[in-house]
Amino acid sequence: MNLRELSDKAAIAELVQTERAARDQGQWLRLADCYHPDSVVSISWIECSGPEFVAASQRAFAAGVRHLHQMSPSIVALNGDRALAETGCAILLGGLVGGVKVTVTTQARLFARVERREGEWRIARLSALYFQDTMASDTPGALPMLDEARLAAYRPSYRYLSYLLAESGKTARSDLAGIDRPDLCAALYAAEEAWLRA
Image (cartoon, rainbow, N blue to C red):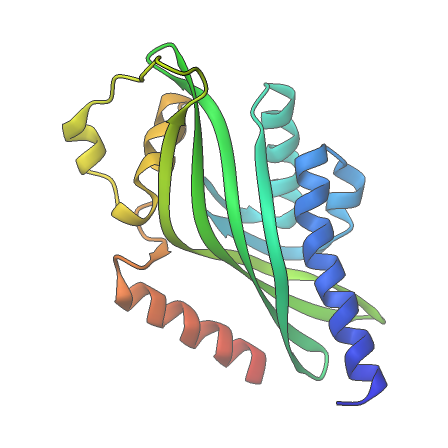
């Protein structure tokens, strides 16, 4: 690996980490600068363009919704002006269930397709693969009352995330890659690799 490749990998890893940090901190211009105008964001609660994702995130933030991300180091694969960055991520989402404050922690892996255009690396697509999640009360001794039948209807790899999103009026997509659906995981891996090598 030469110095140019090392420099590109460092820049791409910085971009991916900056995108999540900017969203967590409500830095909307910084977040918008991470995306190409024709980019796509495809995650649990939304599928839209990068600019639309920034606007939707800003509205949610203004309404008091906070998603926090604990990021692992990014692994970057390069192919000319294309790169694929994979990053382990714990997503923390707070909210109310039956009047009880809770935090849902979702373990996932983010896949960022990154393209260099006019000398600048920016995200062309962001998607995720979901592993598992948990829900915990923020107040010791106060337990949220869950509808067990409703909970059981959600996908196991992001069940509590789906439940909490529903409590706030959002619907988690049922077609996301998750370890409970190996076929969807395989399709995601294949699509990312095909894009990188195209």
